[in-house]
Amino acid sequence: MGIRLFKEPELEKPDLICGWPGIGNIGLIAVDTLKGGLVAEEFGEIEPWDFFYPKKVSIRDGLLESLEFPTNKFYYQQLRRKDLIFFLGEEQPTEGESVYATGEKAYQMANLVLDVAEKFGCQRVYTSGACVSPIHHTVKPRVISVVSSDKLTEEVTRYPNTILISEMGGREGEGVITGLNGLLLAVAKKRGLESICLMGEIPDWLSGSPFPYPKASKSVLEVFADILGIRVDFGFLDKMVAQIEEIVERLYEEFPLEIKERYDERKFVAQAKPGGITEEDAKWIKEHIDEFFKKRGEQGGQSSV
Amino acid sequence: MNFLRKGVNRVDKALFEIYQSPRLPKPYLIVGWQTRDVGKLSSKIIHFLNEKLEGQQIAEIKPSGFFPLGGAVFKDNLIQVPESKFCACQKNDLLIFQSKEPKYEWYNFLNGLLDFAQHYCHIKELYTISARPSLGAHTTPRRILTVYNQPEFQKMLQGYGLEDMTWEGPPAISSYLLWLAKRRDIPGISLWPEIPFYLAAGEDPAAIKLTLSFLDSRFNLGLDLGEIDSEISNQNEKIAQLREEDAEINEYINRLESGLSLNEEEQVKLAREVYEILEKRD
Image (cartoon, rainbow over all chains, first blue to last red; front, top):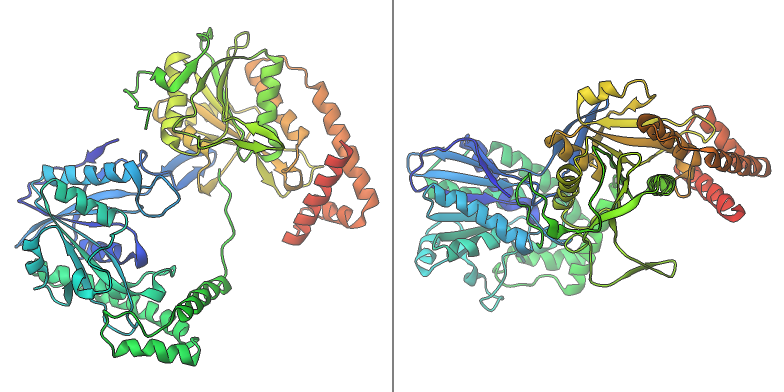
């Protein structure tokens, strides 16, 4: 189980920004877009074989050419205001059937990521993910934050379009950030590092859909841009947002009128309050989405060699 | 995790039950998997070799950490025990490993397998045996498709009538093992004999014979494959009778023989009818 560093850049107290897949891939897309926009350079990886199964084999003319595993890579960039380390994981390590990290392997992965971060003097860690909210899909998603200390609560409320999770209400002050986007923060806190999770809102009825939700990624990215004092090119993300909006609108257009009316109340009521639609409405929407994607066809199972 | 690898050159004996020290000078390792065993080819071949070459179980990989042990699986009224066994065929210098695919920790399991084979038994080559369904008819000659992990080894095995495979997609456990062997500089080959899809749920003695013939020739085993010949004739007769009795089935097989394809419904029907006739008349 190891870390491979191809390069040891000289960094000054870099912040670590991590992204893993999750609901709507909100965090992963935000962090990947930021990393790409800053042209961050790859400098290391976590060896994947202890955590993941290989995902693809390439065989040509009888010769086994390669076996591909999900990647887990470190990148760095030095900005005027801040040095940064990025970590992007293509999959979350898990010991069960869940797609989110669980068990000993997740803990090991979190520690390996932080080992690298601390080696370069990191004192602050950001992760990003999704916050499932009773919002309307036309509303700009807010960024919901959870932090490791009271001191940081003041800081995050100064970020644009950002609130603390306690301001959302309806959770009795408790909750879970599933997977490594949450676990990493806990391990970081245990190590005495500052940690901040920035979660983009996704409408509850879209949280189980198979497509990403880049609109929320954009909200998160805007916050990162503010924190780092940089300008970000949102061109690619905007195109992605437009494509997904088209699909979401098509789904929405198929809502029965009475559900649509109740759901549309969300445009005007405080987003913190669950409501607009009933439990029955939610059930109908979920089944409708499943049906929608079933109709679009599924690829058959593939054999393996 | 109860298995911690302690370096490439050491075998962690806590992973194994070792019953006998292997007395194999420099064996070939043959690996067969009982999971997703198309046409039961792998199980049949391993059983045949162990029986005819007097394979003795010398060790096993303990199931803990690799297989679910929360209860016992049963199939056809029988309790199933996860077994991952090494057998030694001393006269022929073969080390044979047979197992179900582990449910967890493939990387550690396969490295354990290779640790034992490489550092404890000093194997010189690896052969994995699996099978894959083909869309051909049972009356056409079988082929063995192959994957090598070293070009030199590929050259060395030219002349055995094997056919090179080209493929991209999800890896089977055999490919994973082959890749790990490559990293250890162990020459390896995966044998993928083709089995007509409508024999995949049962057995295909023709593919079994072809694969055994290759192993026989490669390792000079002196196997008598006569009993398999009679299984082949027997199976062919039954299918021929089915073709006579059922014009639709006959037409499906005719189409396959002419290189034409069947739709999914036709494939399912052919596979079901053939399976039933072979099972019923056995």
